[in-house]
Image (cartoon, rainbow, N blue to C red; front, top):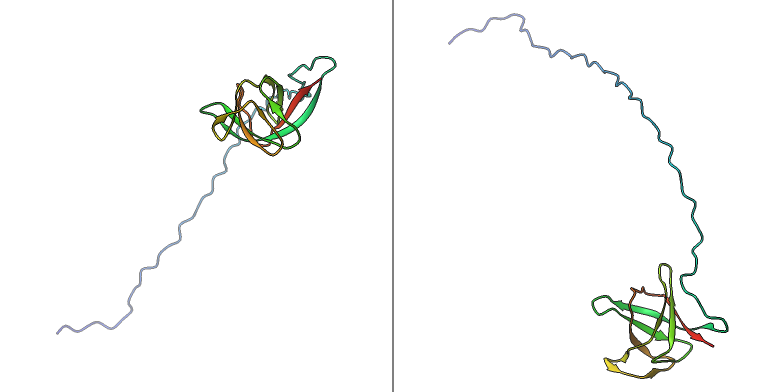
Length: 136
């Protein structure tokens, strides 16, 4: 067996490295002045003939995009083929003549309060759009 020397044992000590923080140079940023357009009040897209008025008859409960049909729940009035309706909503406002109506997939000529009917429309509608009938 070998004999170990008695004496001082040197331990290696890890030295701390100096961390040098470099300051980032700020690039000059040009601020462009954007002209902000003022919001204009929405004008009514539909024209109502003189002597005619709008009577609210219901609301849109669903829209089927693939067949372009709106489901309307009649809450206050009746509706018949040939009537002119106006559908107004947050992003919707148009006037259209009722050409086709259905109740439970069966064609009907008129509908009354409480019925949920399907109507063929040319413009996309959204839920909760109000439906008015042109009366005069």
